[in-house]
Image 1: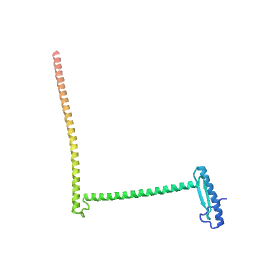
Image 2: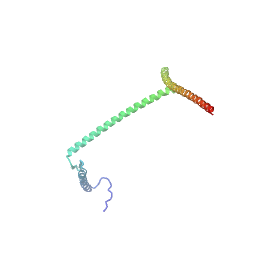
Image 3: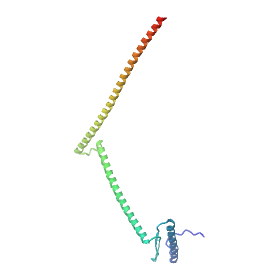
Image 4: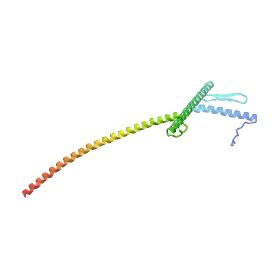
Length: 196
């Protein structure tokens, strides 16, 4: 016989409710025992009936289990509290960073000449001073790069001049050898002609 699905609502009939409570309580106590034996788990179960009668199961000392539960709950609450404090700190840091970014963007726009219509004379002088300092740094860096590039080109020119001198010396040496060979060949040809 297949049982139908029971609707989850309070049983109105008191006798039926008591019978169902007894059966389900015994089933629950049995399952708690099986879980403790099969899985070597620390299991404690507390049940109060509608009339206030206590039913309990524990595979170890009930008081020890309750204390362990309380400690775990307290640690969890402390952990949650620490997490909330950390989250609040992160939110404050994020808000502070957003303010800094907005301020930097505001200054950047002013340095680019945007939104300066509302600036006072002192603010405009400060912007002018900042631009002059920035321009000075840019020019100094540009001069440094030009100097480095010029030094590289001068070193390359020196290297090419040295190679040119070496090539000229080789050409002169080869020219002397070639002239010597030509003269030697002419002498040999003249000797052969005299012999004939």
